[in-house]
Image (tube, rainbow, N blue to C red; front, side):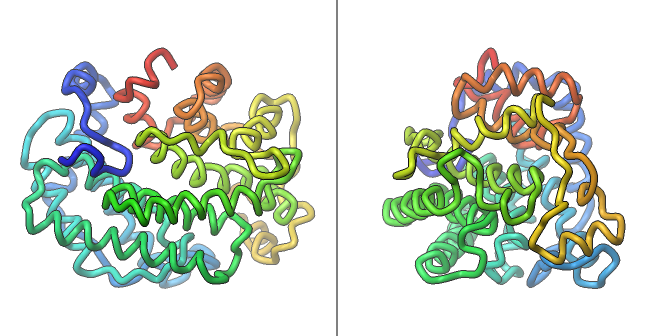
Length: 342
């Protein structure tokens, strides 16, 4: 692997993985990875769940197809944990199936889950055939170029969490291809969004539009994922502030009293979006009632990977809620030298 050719999981010392290879968490990864050895990829030409309610046809078809994603990531992690090339070969098989079947819609809510497939590419990069790497990285280049072009124009929801998800996908795929021009455009897009989205008090546009902490974390998680990719390449996007003096780090500070339980919030009471009321009406969890601080477990852990001052709050919240981390966040925390002791 070229020194900079990765999105999030770059080259690491083997012992960073081997010391965790016998853990219960590794056993769970291997159990899921083995599922991928005997099933066929579920790639489809387009995924669409945004704006749909449970039980609708395209939503269910898309959800079934996305069952591939955690399996692909688990197989890639299993390769790093064991060195068994069978896992890398099956990961390559799945990635090629998606690269050969899927056609980008550039709807960031539908496509946000592809971040884990970019990370899976990182994890097995050294084991990919030259032909497969060319095909898969061309897939990621189309993703980055397409979303960056969207953001150069006037896409819908350009000041909301949609833009955070666009930036996440564009940034990870830009770093994956190691293209300085794409990385520069992603950096500029990140700064424009921080300028438009994060208010002087550290609150985000989504909170005022949706009246929900759920959408604060849904905005910050992808934005910090982009910042974490930059951080892994030696760039500090997390601390960057807009002209009003606010940035992603300040938005996490704004969230802390809610995550600690010091403050509470009744969700979606004054949302301006009709679909929020529709989801509450059909009983979709999380769209009414008091916000559960467990919803910030991944958010605070991402912040802790970017700045050690958030280690304490992240540890306290995870211990209090026992909410498991997203798979990739957990393993990045375990294997990243910067996360030792956090």
